[in-house]
Image (cartoon, rainbow, N blue to C red; front, side, top):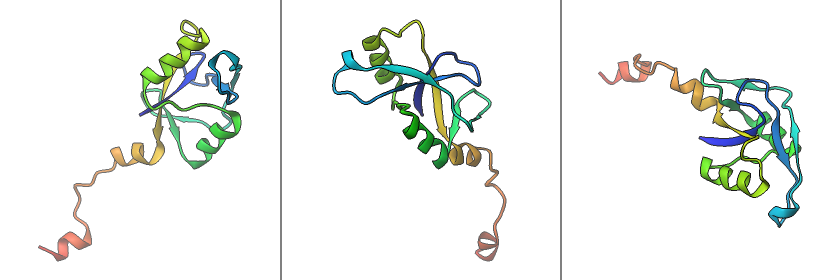
Length: 111
């Protein structure tokens, strides 16, 4: 799972966006909202290609681990202000709840 930074851990939160910079001291941040966002039952953002494009356009960084997001928060002095929000690929979430125990025509032919 990947992570983004938000102002709250509840749905419809504002996400932190950053302009790319070589130096952590010169990074300026702003909060932005996604237009089309879907959540799973745990409050993680479900992303597809459109959501990833929106992340890119708005400048929302996606972190591979919480530890890397935390380092970024410490560097920007946002430790008490930002929350971690999980990001999951929408198709992986859908397949998790698909019952694959049913026989397909292929398995019936091979019995």
